[in-house]
Amino acid sequence: MRVTVIGSGYVGLVVGACLADSGNDVVCADVDARKVEKLLQGVVPFFEPGLDTIVKRNLEEGRLNFTTDVEAAIRRGAIIFIAVGTPQGDDGSAEMRFVDQVADTIGRTLAAGENVFVDGLKIVLTKSTVPVGTSDRIRGLIGQHAPRGYVVCSNPEFLKEGDAVNDFLKPDRIVVGVPETPEGETAKRVLHELFEPFNRQRDRMLFMDVRSSELTKYAANALLATKISFMNDLANLAERVGADIERVRVGIGSDPRIGYQFLFPGTGYGGSCFPKDVKALIHTSEVNGHALRILGAVDEVNRDQKRILLRKVLKHYGDTGIAGRTFAVWGLAFKPRTDDMREAPSIDLINGLLEAGAKVKAYDPEAAENAKDFFGDRITYCDHNYDCLEGADALLVVTEWSAFRGPDFDLIAQKLKAPVIFDGRNLYEPERLAARGFTYYAIGRGASLPV
Image (tube, rainbow, N blue to C red):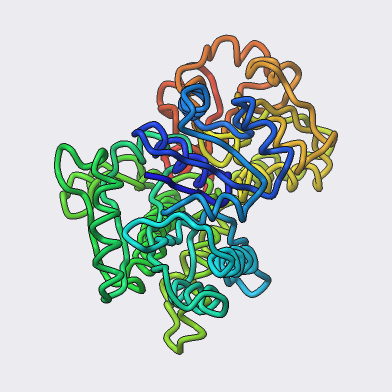
């Protein structure tokens, strides 16, 4: 099928590359000329495991192309995915200006003629995370120029950064919202064929009305964020009552109604989805006269949790303070297997350390360049995780990269001024580190400082 993806960021590029890899003729359109130039050379402008290989392969085989000519891309695509950004507005809502611009361009291009269709229709799908009612909004904007010849559907993404390619190729579910019209029935049949390569083991297609599909995306992220904030809040209680949150986690996770996923306490969630989507859903609930009170607490707990390691550091050093001290930070990205710094807990931590007069030496396998947009030359960027330790007063673990899980503790103790570790991801066992002579603080564990 001839597919157009408008927007070549995390979502759009994964969608375009994976659909091309399943045999479709795909063009990705983006207004960023520098990004398009890199992509035409097979250079992916962000780190996502496995994506560069798929992009290069499909470029070479002619199934994938990139362009800045959005109108030409719309004309040649029978199926159009809208995958542009919906940044957070000042009031917490999702800003829709980029989506609106694309919808207007689709309408004008349709009205101008010479378009490719499938079964007489151009099928337009929102892939961006958008508020409930956006598909109606898009249909209205297109309809100002072209009264017929298209159908607007919703196909929310469920892609985890760091595992997005695998999520697309082997999805848990494929949610599609279609209108209850003859055009919607046509779209349902065409889209089932488009996604058939990802349904060979079993049918993962979940067709529903458009507004339900739009709410499903926000509801999924909000519920996962709720589990994270609940465990972080519970971990802080565990410190005060002398319980070990890791044992609690195993105890409650063994209940199949709860499960183990997203029960790891830490320094709060970040990234491009959870923080923004929680706030956007809160905003949607408020403007519709039904405040989601639980989500307000989820957001508040998360904002507070991002400073939990800083508070532990300040409490440990007490009256002597941290001004003039140097701290080694392992991990800058908001999660492993990505270079994404958006809403990363490391930002709050490092800014707090700097404001208190401390110095920071940091290492991340992928995110160092992006971190410079947040910290500039105010911190030292190291090429190896052990390089950060030389002359540092303590080690702070912020992101749970695999390389940090089983480090050389003898080398750590040798390089640090004092054997002190603040572990924001509960990677190590308190008893083992205590036996090695470390002062070890984690999140919600027996040896932790309640703050």
